[in-house]
Image 1 (spheres, helix red, strand yellow):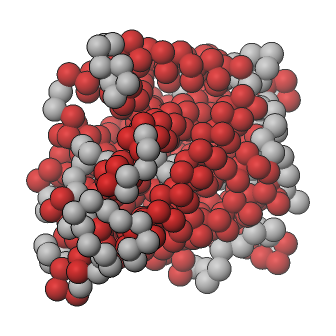
Image 2: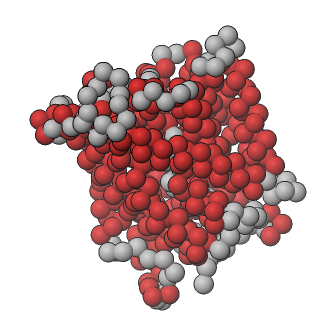
Length: 472
């Protein structure tokens, strides 16, 4: 069995994330572009019923992924998380491929968020070029991440806090509008016609599985809890607590938002480039509603960009310590920040700023598919790692009762998780707009695997037989 190289104490990351940081990281990880823009597009494509079923199925998959990740992360709270687990319990080539695939998807997503933030600033400063705001936000988030892990955690805590409060207010206002407590322009209450059974599935049932990649993209970011395990205080207590919040946040935020938007807007009125959240607030006659929601969406986008930078940087640092990335990326500053990895991630992310000169909706759908495919394959890797870990743990004499956090209904949960993910990827082959993303994703994974087999498999630095840290 291949072991993970031991990281010297002087080159270890600090466990400076507190419980409140991890709580907000898990709560805010899925509240971003996927909710404020992508939900409207999903309703438009699959109808209210299709969107509800799709996000509920996605929530079930996410729950299965997170309990699998939780068992691994509590037992082995290491930075790098599922990439390290895949290397140890599946194969080094699988860990290498999953790590680089997730890194590319996450780093590119950060660049897309910077571009989106620059576009949003046109709302207030129409004469200022977008690239100036993009550069401003790149520098801002770089500085926050370069200072300390605590700096990232504090920024994400407040970013996520703004999103959560704004969404709770939106849900309250939307629910009041549905029953006529708050009048909407040109729309009589109560709003129930759009939720009639005849209009729930305007495009049929099969479209649900094709739009599932939109759902997976929306839920991207929850796995940050595992990546942050190596820098979290008391991971045995805080990681399970963060995971338990998953179903609650999905039901409260996504499902409630879909019901409200579907009740008030016909599916044909919703789309991708205009946020229905802003439209609803303006219809409710709330003063400065456009600016308020634009600010909320801006903080949400910056939050996602902030999280993507963190995830990409820590994953690259972990891979460098395992000999799967250039050694320079394993270095830390005096403040225990992997600055070289952060700089490389920023440079890689800047390539995505080119999307501002292309058709925005086309690029968004393509990148969403690529990012969603990357996450789906990573989720399969997490479930497979847990499946193999449990077998290895029992075979080596471990007692299941000693695990601090256990996957319920093992082995059905990881097996069903893998099967659902495979089913979703299979349906993408029938969608011309997402097929190219599927081909790119699978092709990149295969190239990484072949590269590892040819170039790295025989290197002793990768095969060093040293155990990773475990919680006992």
